[in-house]
Image (tube, protein in one colour):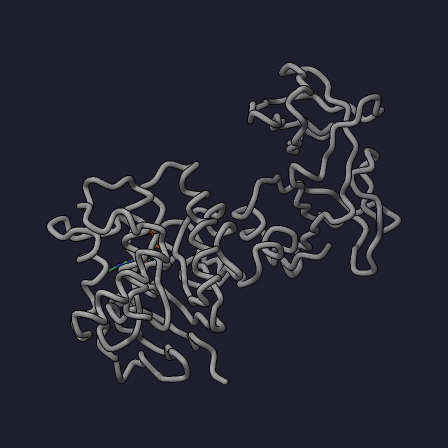
Length: 353
Ligand code: ATP
């Protein structure tokens, strides 16, 4: 059986500039994928290539096994069975909710169209708003109309282009979780484009993190966070500090603080390794002998986010309950909990835990 969507070594060039290089991805039916990455990494270009608005320079894009884009042949967007939800929702202001949702259903009879629109209104729980105008709806409701309109023609894949970015941050994560629930319940295959990792985590089964048009790592949200394949992934995903630690004469990492204390057959005495330290790798422990100076702190409601100073001058993060309130310059007693810490060797840049 073919995958619902397959990108095979896709590259896109703008003149001499490679905006996307050699990207391969697959998405199975009912899965939600995400293209994540910093501004300019090629997310929108890839999405436009899947939608058929952008020609590809090499490789191929396949929908349910059918080639929809190759350098030689481009199926026009309207023949692709692709639905799109845009950043600004792009609802037609002069059409009410019912007519917005029914917009792409001109090929159906009146009765069939009405039935399908009613089904979509129920799907996005907007049955009471069928006659409302877009400007009368909240941002979240407009978003659901846009979703219903894109899903009405039963696309083979739904493309979501930063669909929550115009909403405030609390509503954004809540809506992302709601949309995920709605899509998975209905077996919809979708790709989300975003630069916001929280949105990506809330929605996607798998995430392709892009850097300069290439896939830096394509993985589950869990693996991107806990098993980053290189330093770019480690620094982009989640919070944390990269610190340098030197291997001692016995071939072990031991900085005397118990940050990490173990050997590895590949490690050479004197070699400097890079460690990714996450805020959850260092815990507050009342009475601990290890006490680190507080460089800065940020109140987060349920927690404090501390930046702590190691004796060698490097900084590490630490998350504590917010009743642990140590002033800047004070000492925070901590315990290191680094059995899962990721170590990057300079020689190959690869991560290992
Ligand atoms: P953002 O999050 O800012 O939207 P993005 O990851 O979606 O960024 P793209 O819009 O795909 O990135 O752009 C990728 C690269 O290609 C960028 O360097 C951009 O400047 C360049 N680019 C995009 N469109 C064109 C174009 N029509 N002509 C030339 N270069 C372009």
